Image (cartoon, rainbow over all chains, first blue to last red):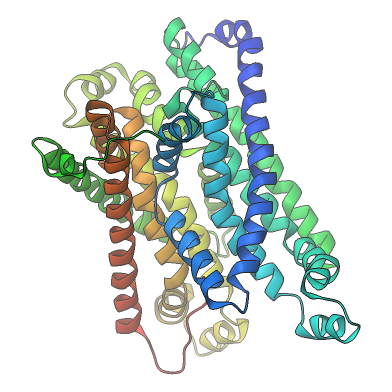
Length: 218
Length: 239
């Protein structure tokens, strides 16, 4: 324990920073994609057409019962096969995350849509708006606003989950830390440092969510 | 798309055995980790609701620490870093003589991580109980231990069964992270079959179907538990 080597962390900071950028970019893009796709799934799930809601329910339940690593493997294998040429592990990981997270975001958005009172939809119909106008101008903005804290919380979970791209050797923060750990033979320092970095980001994120919740509830 | 279908690889030697042994490890890791997660998580959850400030702070620190670090990082710390940080004798034993180190490490890491999530559910369940019930119990002469034993725990554990069910499902999914430290559980085996046979579709489909079946069985099981424990007039909280 006495020979804890801070030098190795300092020397590898530029390399780790590149990895962290990949992690953050993956989180951001997957969050945007997941929320858009998830909202569509939620609308399908709540639609009056039974076949649409059945498709959405099957999708969500299927994706929620399998591990994220398996989904990452699936798309790492499927995407090049479907496109016919390799496109790199960043894009196949991104697709896997959007597909996977959409299932979770759709459950959040479904709760959000249901939190908007029925009277608002009726009022929209009475003023002659069609389904899409009602959703776009009345229901979704409120649903989204009500769910912002939970959406961000899910984003924090997503940020932690991006570490799993380690299994397809995409060089995110986790993979970068582990590369340094192995080449320098400094496993203890690097993994504890990685834990600290993730902790700071996630703790700050959840603190922000708590403050946001208090502000909204007042 | 150019792909040669060959579903029979799934029942060929030795791939069927690989899947079955993978399933065995997945179930073993998940169930053993659940024992740790449920008992420790209940304890930490209760700590966070006690009147004693120090115990409450300890519970809060535990939850924040384990919830805000990715499970993968925790898995690596338990596997690679902890043996180095231990006193020499114990460290050497962990590295050389510990029986089945991948399995043991995966169970500990997954158990302690999930405990923090279970603790949050337990705390929420206890906090949702109306204050009046506790006041009534105290005024009829119960001490803190009895209030928990006869009022808070029996009610809260019944109401949190739905969220606990989803944690129970999550532990099976999260057990797949054990592959990162070399345990050949279900996901690892399917990936290995995909690599050996180039039949990724078949291999991953098999794993997907098995996970879905596990989820269905686990849901049914917890539903039975819920039905068996239900008291008339009390409804469970939606997860």
